[in-house]
Length: 168
Image (cartoon, helix red, strand yellow):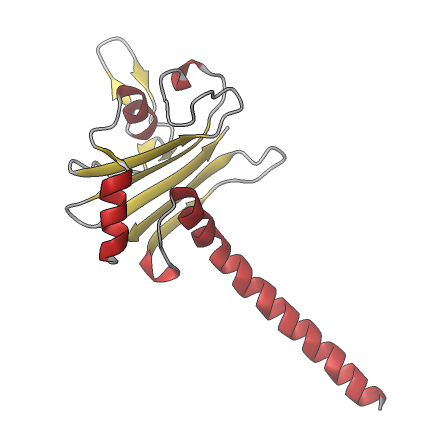
């Protein structure tokens, strides 16, 4: 009888670990889908970079994925803003340089922008900062000491979606 109870206990623990692990693996895609209010799945994933961690959870989450569902593409086209990005968002994503100064890119790895240059498409922006009074407005974003936002760019030429959650 003890062997049966031990077997059931071990089997239950293994099953629980597998179930928790598979749920955790789908969690980021579910969060992105929910944040952007569009349907995406693991099959769409191309690339992923995650630097969040530490005590405050600062860092960058970056995903690139291919969107093949026509309904999702139409939803993006009808709900998101048409490119080009605003000047502030372009500074955050790509960086801006002139003769006397440079700003950004903030969403970068080793100083190189993670987002590719997208000419035709749409973008989504959500300011998650505690000082934000309008979560869709980026007017004052560069005047803060910290950033907490989500930005996504959809390239209509390639049907690729680029997503980033940025926290400082």
